[in-house]
Image 1 (cartoon, helix red, strand yellow):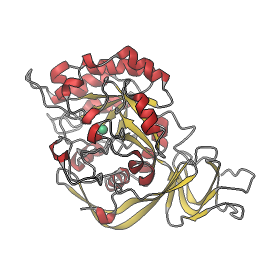
Image 2 (cartoon, protein in one colour):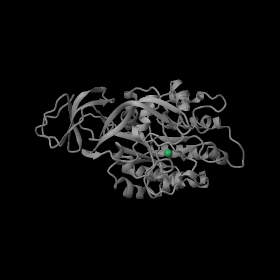
Image 3 (cartoon, helix red, strand yellow):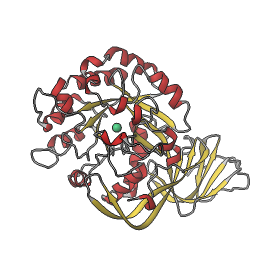
Image 4 (tube, helix red, strand yellow):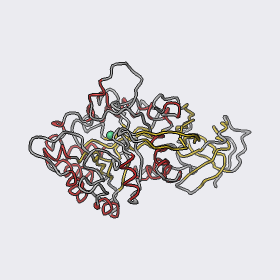
Length: 422
Ligand SMILES: [Zn+2]
């Protein structure tokens, strides 16, 4: 425990259960913040000179949550992009990683209108494709190998390393039926060129074209040899074909274990295709996700706008609401420990982003990005979009966000709470 020798603090969070998986700390303590940074963590911090004290007794205090799979390029990626702060600070999430929304062409707008305009910290994995993630990649013809400029995407990525933390691409049967694995080869080249991880979506996105039917298992078999240690396989729990579960055996594809042994990582990328049945199979095989992206977007998430509901025409429409904290509750229900779950959204995510010296821990000196969580007890029923129900006794609900020292209420309508489960 470290305490800087100065008793004037901007904010003290008093008496919560502080859990910092990065340092291994778990105990009731006070957390002091000054000048936008964590200043001290100790069993009792004198608050006489603090400008503000917030009592968080009975709550869990953790490093600010990091959502490694967001879609927040609002007004540019069509209905896909949600409001950053509704997904971010107002949902208890201090850092959002937009997965492939901005491209080399639209990154300046992403910086100006999204990243700089939001209270949440918003960074991105740069899209492999010229157009970025428009309309949720609805138009397959925009995502072929000719729609990629490897050299220029590397250049833009390298010039914007403060925002660009990785590269996003898709490996799935619809694309493979059109172009084989050529786009993934280009994406891998871009990631090497920028020197960041490659994040690959798994699970069918587009219908197969007339050239023929692709063996879904061949996607991951041909993908893994193109990846490097530190790259990320996404959507391990998808119900769509072409993921971790072999369509031939209905068991974990053996190449997944080989990939993890090579240092390839797994991000949940929850989305509307999240399946409890697939999750149970993958977790029973001993696979653990490294990070937990929520993958909320406008086709599967209530956005509180108009009554017209054209979302249902999108293949990624789903009726079950979810958010990052609900995805955390689901991982708890699936048997992960609270520490394992918290690590996916703090310590591990910061490491993935190469930002562990700024965020992802409550260590004094780091940015004062902090989330206060209420772990509510009761009898809850969680549901996926395949109609599977899972009973659980704990639900994680965000109650307060601190972003760079500023206190922000968690009032987003996107947060799923016990009374909004249906
Ligand atoms: Zn996504």
